[in-house]
Structures are given as structure tokens and as C-alpha cells.
Image (cartoon, rainbow, N blue to C red; front, side, top):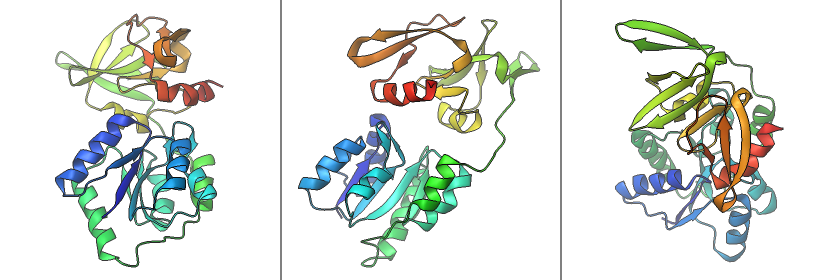
Length: 251
């Protein structure tokens, strides 16, 4: 089986590659942007199966299909919430919600293999998906988080949160008053729980609140260093592949 991964976050792409290897599927090719994918398809035969992230560093991956008539089956890998998933389901072999669960990955592969040889050359109509991405169904995001302080529970409103960060396998929220609290959610889970107009995942380690940005400074390797009002860590860096979408988010 010839399989490729199109995913802008290289750690996520490598993790998916390892998960596929565990079920004896080797994905030799990993692509990380719309431009890179377009160039690759111009000179390579189409694979049997594509694991496709929706949001790439330089745009929506749908742009690939608008330029090239892809003759492959597609399994979406997406961080979008359940409101958009039905459209993904109707327009692909399957979808996998990030962070990808190994059992769900195996089920998606089984679904693909059970449809062979008819699973190739899937006709994809992106209109419904695009509508949901541009005009998502209104949903409720978290307005507060509960944290444990000794034997007590304390409620922290999102207005008090400057950023979320991971450290030593734990996830913390940092408040505008300079306090840090351990929480039970991962950053991947938090991305789905907080208002995307206010919070942005700038790296594997940080989700920041737009209202807490004090300064932004050019950093090495075309990255940006973010300075927050109260959190003085020096490693609040926008990953290079996220700089362009981060600037678009700011506007």
C-alpha cells in the first residue's frame, strides 16, 4: 500500500508515521504544506491513500484538490470539532480527530481496506466542508476552568488566563495575576475548548491569549518571540511554520 501523510506539524506527522508502522503500514512520504504537496504530485504517481490535515501552514489543504485531480482515497486528520465532522465523513473514507487514537486509526484503515478496490479515485465535494469552516455552527467555549488548590477547588475565568503551557508532562494555566495552576486537559484538548478568536496555539508548548500580548520580536529562523504582560518565560516562541497563520489570526 502506497501511503503519504500531508500534515504541517512535523511532530504530528512523525507520530502518525510511527502509529502506521505499528500496524505494518509504511508512509515513506510526509508533506507539510500546500505548495510542497502540489510540487510533489506533479512528479510522483498518486498514492493509494492520503492522510490529510485540513489546515496547513500556507492554507487549507483543499487547494491541492482544486489544482490537481487527485486519484487517491482520503482519510482526514483534523483538529476541527464535531460540528464539522459529518461533512468530512461524507466526503472521504473516514476522518480522525486529533490527537489521533491508535484504535480509531486501525478502524479507519480497516474501513479503507474493506472498500478496496473501489476506494480509489474518491470524488470529493468540499462545498459543505468549506461552509462549516468559514461559518461554523455556533458552539459554546469554556468560560472558566476549575483548578485544585490544596483540598479546595478554585474557579478561574478565561479573562484571567494569560496562557496555557506544557511542562514536565503537565499542562498549566498562567493567570494575569502571575499564578500557575495545573489542569487536567492537554494542549490538544484545550485547542478545542477555548475561543479561537482569543486563544492561539503558537507552538507545541504554548497557547496564548491575544489580550495578554505585550510585544512581538523577530527571532532566529524566521520565528517570533512573544512577550506577555506577566508571564516572563523566554521560550514563548511562535513556531516557524505557524508564523504566517499566526499573523493572519492577529488581524
